Each structure stands twice: as C-alpha cells, then as structure tokens.
Length: 183
Image (cartoon, rainbow, N blue to C red):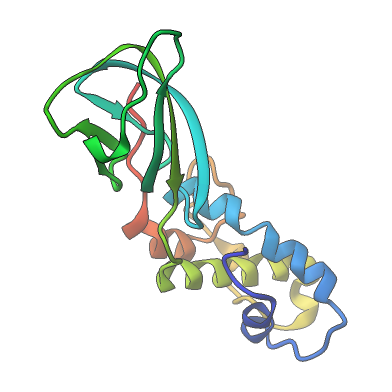
C-alpha cells in the first residue's frame, strides 16, 4: 500500500484525466523510501533481524515497532522467549523481559511488525507535497506554478538530501523523526 492513493495524488496535482496515471503511480510508489528514511517505517511490515542479547534489553533497528511476533535463539540449545513475557517500547524499539531478567545466550532472531498502525495525516500531507515537488521536476515551469514556485530556490539544503526533499516536507516530518541510531 502506498502512502497516498492515485486519487489523492491527482487531487493534489489538479489532474482530472487518466493520461498520466501510469507515470504518476511510479512517483507515488517512490514516496515511501525518502519519507521512511527520515521517520522510520510508516506502513506496517514484518521485520526479522538478528540481535545480540547481552543485557536486560534488546534494541530493534526498525522503529517504531507495533508488535512482537517471536523471539527465538539463533544458537542451538536455546529456548524461545514467549512474547507475552516481554514488554515492547515500540516508539524506542526496546524490548525488556517483564521479570527483569537479561537476554543472555548470544544471538536472538526477533520477528516483529514495524510501522505506525496507520499513516498520520501530517505524514500523508508531507508525502503529497513531496509528490507535488517531484512531479514539478518532470514538467518544469512549462506547467505553470504546479508544486510551488520556490521549490527550486532552496537556499538551505539539508545535508545528505540535496534538493529532492523540500524543507517544508522535512518540517512536517520533524515531529515523527526517528532518533539517530546508537552503535
């Protein structure tokens, strides 16, 4: 599922024909990756990752997380942990045992659902503005002021983003920004 529908995209761009539907769908499909680079998973998806357990917490890398599916040892001889026996802080991606114990014994394969449950309206709006900006690069000034006249005049680019992501999109996403990873 995309962050926005074809109908929402066409409404944002004031398009009332089907002439560009195939091309526009490619733009819609491309919105998720740059948005999620900044805010983490938006749409729910299953994730499985191997995490080393040497303390009282396991730290998931795809946050936010909605729910845990399983925690099983990678090494033979270990015993799976019942997900009912742990607490998930989904916003931070931290898993703790309810009995206060440690995750010892090496590597654990943790399977969980990462995402937000539903797409917040602010993120949806940011995706629509990003779509508008990217669509304007396809057709340029010849289509008038579609996408806003100042998007190409950004004077304060965000390091690592270039000009593909307008500042107004980043400002909308700021409230949902994931914290930097800790090594």
